[in-house]
Image 1 (cartoon, rainbow, N blue to C red):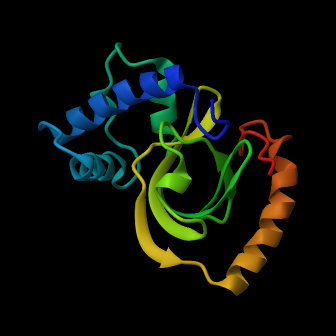
Image 2: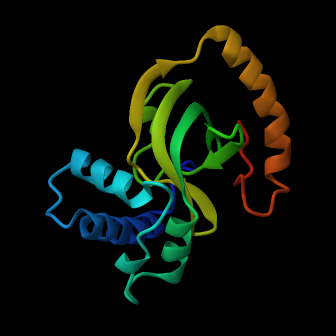
Length: 169
């Protein structure tokens, strides 16, 4: 198993629920990635406000994760042994797991993306719908952010709500 990916049984459990939730939000058959992205945008528009879509068939941990998710723009910095470093729009550094496809197979390092990060299975995970905004970070900003990231990574292992797994190169 790749350390940057969520355990496959957890990833599959998450995806079954997430696809059903997004289908419920869209109120139409989901035909592809664009449909899922549109439904996700509706789900998180103006903050999470679609409480009615949950019924007792959803895992409690999934419901709590979706309700506390961060939807928005991130900088994907780089891959570490235990996860991916993302910088949120509030300047917080997060260490996340991918679900089934490694981020480096979808996007290059140091790029601006839109995605959702949420807690699931005791870790922070990227929801798998990654939109590359085609905005790349320049060398001077990378140098500055690399210094920030070095400092932040020291805090990750002691942070209770995992900013997240302790990311080590």
